[in-house]
Image (cartoon, rainbow, N blue to C red; front, top):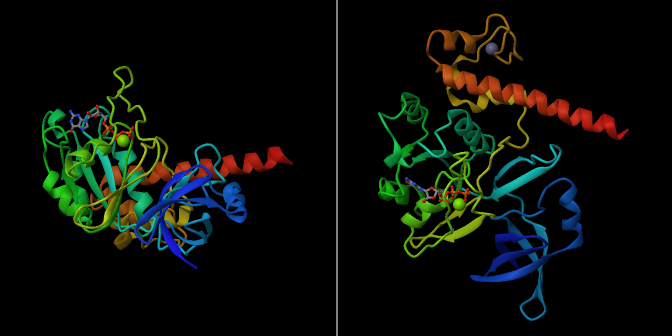
Length: 311
Ligand SMILES: Nc1nc2c(ncn2[C@@H]2O[C@H](COP(=O)(O)OP(=O)(O)OP(=O)(O)O)[C@@H](O)[C@H]2O)c(=O)[nH]1
Ligand SMILES: [Mg+2]
Ligand SMILES: [Zn+2]
């Protein structure tokens, strides 16, 4: 059975690259039924098994097991998964210094989209031309735990060469809030690319959700990069409270606590909390951790309430 790579998802139709050619394909019934558990049954980057042929049209029969998956909780229904991209090598998390302002809480959530799926993350902070004063010292922390940081400006062309090197030859997915300049940076980095971009709202300093679906962009030197629509709410799919601390890389050496199931909140003799007090774990990261942990509790309660109201 021939196979292909999904390079675009548009409703019940997908575009699949079959032996180097991009073709429409329909989804078969069994896959459509998957909508109850997932917003879209197939995801950009999926390797799929195909039925049909060039003359009569192609149909997606099944999905080859994914190497990995970038996915969040569907904000409209916490029991459903919203898959963003499959089978990627790298998750590039974009923020901007202004319009919208740099938000470390949001950045740490986006990083978890990668960490929870075993996908190495990288950070790009765009709109360096709008920065006043030196970059916040928190940004120096990430390279120490192996996450590279680039300060870029799509407007002035800063760090474009660095970004090109970062994505060269790989399958990358670019994520971040709306309006930080994901599409603008890719336009600047990839010759001949003209993705639509739009100014952020003056009133709210938020983006206007210009990119509306995941866009697959082939790189001239090989590899591809996926531009994605800005996400406002990012809760990584399948995240469990007892696994969260492991995804904060720097906690690991200190997660030696009195209780084996310690969540590093208020438990006595907690190695992680001691490390925060001694300054070995930065307070801002511990703060992110606590907020995400609380949001996981809230999400569990939301799901429980839905279940009860149905009965
Ligand atoms: N000053 C400045 N403005 C920038 C820079 N990069 C992008 N912008 C502007 O920021 C606005 C949003 O840029 P987009 O590229 O559409 O942002 P996006 O992240 O793709 O947004 P969505 O597609 O909505 O997720 C546009 O008006 C861009 O011109 C930059 O480096 N400096
Ligand atoms: Mg965009
Ligand atoms: Zn602990």
